[in-house]
Length: 99
DNA sequence: AATACACCGCGTCATTGGTG
DNA sequence: CACCAATGACGCGGTGTATT
Image (cartoon, rainbow, N blue to C red):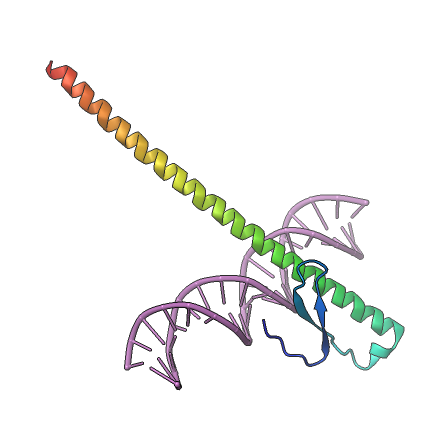
C-alpha cells in the first residue's frame, strides 16, 4: 500500500502492526480553533472506524463466498453419488426383470 | 525490457437499516 | 429524528501474466 504523504499522519493499528495514512483535511483555516480541531478529530475517527468496518466487511464477504463454494462442492459430490446409486439400482432392476 | 490487461485489496463516500 | 454500523460503488495503486 502506498499512500501519498501530503498532509496527514501515518497511524498504526493496535493489533497487527499495520500502518496506514490518515489524511487531515484543512477546513478554511478553522483547524486551529477548538471547534475546527474537534471537527477534524471527529472526521478522523469516522474515517478510521469506517476503514476498519470496510476491512471486516470484505473479510466476511470472502468467508461467505468460501462457504458457498464449499457447499457447491458438497452438493456436487452428493449429486454424483445419487446418480451412481440410481444407475446401479436401475441395473439391478433390469437384471431381476430378465431373470 | 516494455506494454497491456486482469485481478486484488484498499480507502473513501453515499446510502441504508436498525436502535435509542 | 439523530446516530451508527454495515455495505455497495468507485477510483487508485500494486502485482502477476501474456504479448510484442
